[in-house]
Image 1: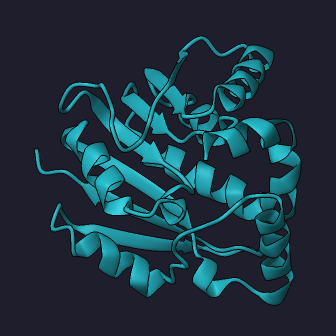
Image 2 (image 1 turned 45 degrees about the horizontal axis):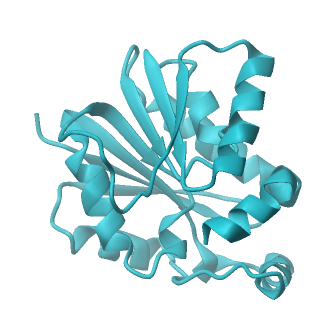
Image 3 (image 1 turned 90 degrees about the vertical axis):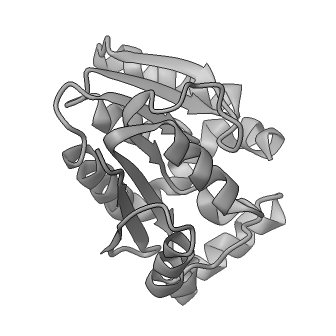
Length: 204
């Protein structure tokens, strides 16, 4: 999967442009959920949309992705904005080297639908979320995709992109609740490709 994203990193932001309002709204909403001064981990961060938004409130943000090329794009954006509280590292969302409870807020945006076993990633993200912290999981809801965006997804598939799950708001909530990790809320961000912004609050 990282080979695909390495190859398409230069075009990723352009490809996301048609759904820009929903993407920006989800990143802004996620940032609102970040406590001031928090230690934040952003996994599968791509070119850094959610990391850059979180950095406005966070004390520090560790921006991670499996693709080095994606991270290079995120670093360039960070330098242009003059932000000093972001660090970058390559990470596999299903096998994090970070300690238990190391982050006050953890974000993994628009990645769970790509994974054959997303529950493995959610449990790993939950592990590194600190007591009293938040796990924030915005995920595309392909199960609610309209015809126009469905055509775009088929174009992606033609160049090597594949997704494993076509979540709806209901099936996404049920998937997370079955993990029995904590209280789950799912807010739908409307758009050409809607986003289900799930939040799991870890007991203190």
